[in-house]
Figure (cartoon, rainbow, N blue to C red):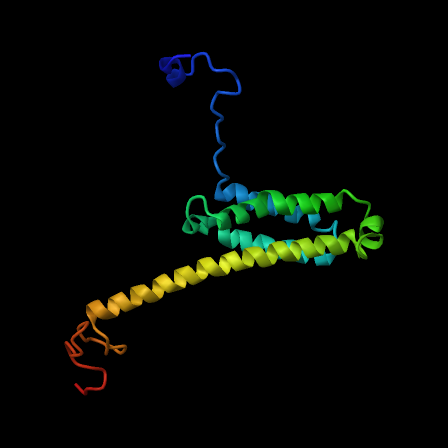
Length: 181
């Protein structure tokens, strides 16, 4: 096969053809996925499961619009997306397929019931995305502090500006509230 054919795809076998990479899920798709899981457990699973899924859902709702702050290809962003669209639904759906009595009472692994195992998994997912959320919030807080320091440097260091004073001058531009007319 010549270089011309390789450039334009001529003569390629199925294995040699490029594979299209699907677009990452949108914020709306991520939130919809976690909401669907929450609706599947509500009224069908014990309160311990519903509360844990609710915790994960709330953090995903908070994080989904902020994933771009983590950067393209970020492992943390992937973890949040995978939690909402794969890890959480798969764990919950596996549990929901079991008969309730079996899932909640029968020991299946290392002295734990399916309910206990699911709760452990949900706790792990929740604490993992909570850590990611904290990291993003810390980064935003650091940026806010840095911006505040920039403003102090640019416009002055006074933390107190009297009403009616000019920024950075420390001198009132007109009468102060304490002056009598």
